[in-house]
Amino acid sequence: MLCINYLFRIMLTTALFVSITLFKPTMVEAATTKAQFDNNGENVTVECELVQKGRLRYPPRAKRFNFVGEVTVGFSISQEGKVLDPHVLESSPPGLFEKSALKHVRSWLYNPPQFEGKAVQVSDAKVKIVFRPN
Image 1 (tube, helix red, strand yellow):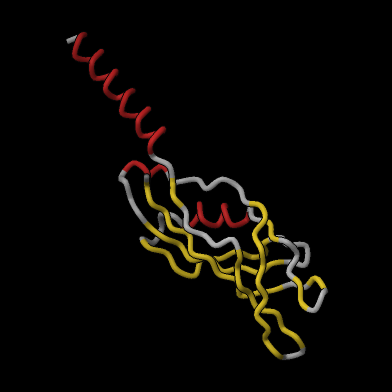
Image 2: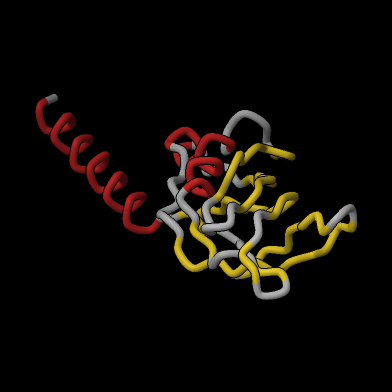
C-alpha cells in the first residue's frame, strides 16, 4: 500500500510539472488598436500603438479542464496612453476568462493617441483575446 501511494505521488507530481511547463496561454492581439476620436461631432478613427503589456494569466479552472475561449474587451485610451474603463463586450464560454482578460488589458500602455499632432483621448477601442492551451 505504501508503494502505491508513493507511485501515485510521483505520477501526480510529474503530471503537474508537465502541465506547468507545457501549458501556457496563447493570446491573439494586435500591436495596434483602432479607436474613435470625436473631432467636433465627427468621429475620426485613430490607430493606437501598444507599447507595453503585462503577463496574461490563464485561469486555473480553465487550465485544469483544458478549456479554450475568447473575450472581446472594449475600452478607452487616455491622452497619456493608459487604458480606461475596460469592459467585456463578448465572452465565450461565459464566466470563465473575463476576469483574467480585464486584468491583462488594464496592464497595457499605448503610445499617446495622436490626432493632427496633438495627444487625444480615444474611445471605442476593441480587442479580442483568445485563450488557447499550448
